[in-house]
Length: 123
Image (cartoon, rainbow, N blue to C red; front, side):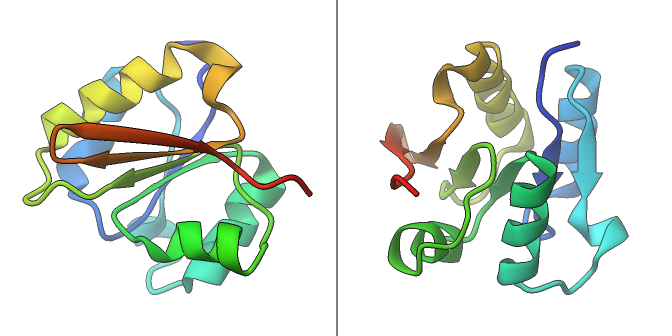
């Protein structure tokens, strides 16, 4: 679907998520197939520079943004539900993306039945 930002998907998420999001019309950059083993710092800088969203299962990304004040991506989605259900996560991601730019500049954390949203720090 036109209007969705490109999402960089961290390699720590299931490959089935890639297919689910692509079926939903999301342009995907799959870290596992493009920059395998890249550091969190690299992925964050890449997503920030390209103005992509970033989806991960890694809580180091919020630490890098809020603690170390590294430049954030367009939006950050963190999946903390274990095991990760690709269909559920894809549905949640698509719901967030359909809101348009309302959540750009935010981190969204999915954890159990909870969903937390926090604005990125001011530059």
